[in-house]
Image 1 (cartoon, one colour):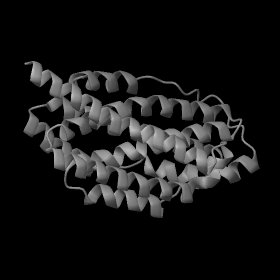
Image 2 (cartoon, one colour):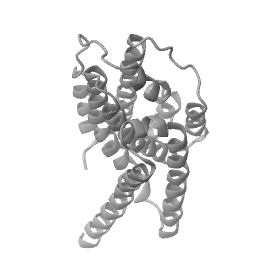
Image 3 (cartoon, one colour):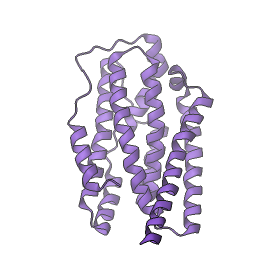
Image 4 (cartoon, one colour):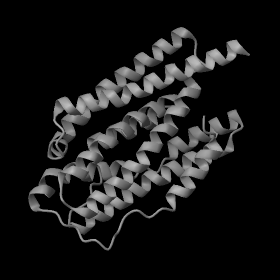
Length: 248
């Protein structure tokens, strides 16, 4: 699997890329704004976390595993998320909307992140949020004819694809060290958290998702398909890891 050094290099390179043409003016109708404004502001707020709790957990993990590049990689990952928040915030300002300072969904996710005192739990929260982001930003891309907003969404979607690979790899490092019973418990917890979260996301953001052509059935189908790629990844990689041990 890619090393932390690989991910450090990836994030450094990716953060230097400028994919958004800010010379474009927002071309969005009042009806389109009305359909997406609430969710746009909520997701913008969610992308602005300072990452202090995650950084603290990663510092401990990097020391424990003697992997300083992992900490740097995670710090760069946080910067990439903050870049998304900055870009969305700039767009919100351009179309004349006030930014949100507080929202129940964002407060809940921040509470979950601060509640976690181990990196594994934090990682599964991030993975589910990243999958939801993929679906949401695709819907946001399709909900309007605004080229500037579409370019912002494409930039985020390109980043998110790598974020999920990065986080799945980290989750695997915890999963493969567990006993059979601990693995069963972990998968159960992952799935319960996922199930509850996707219902909350649909309830809060169905208006914008529908504006982007994603109904409830399609949202759940897409989310299940994405999430079970993580579960499949954990088991397939674990089987491969066990096979290498037996051969050795």
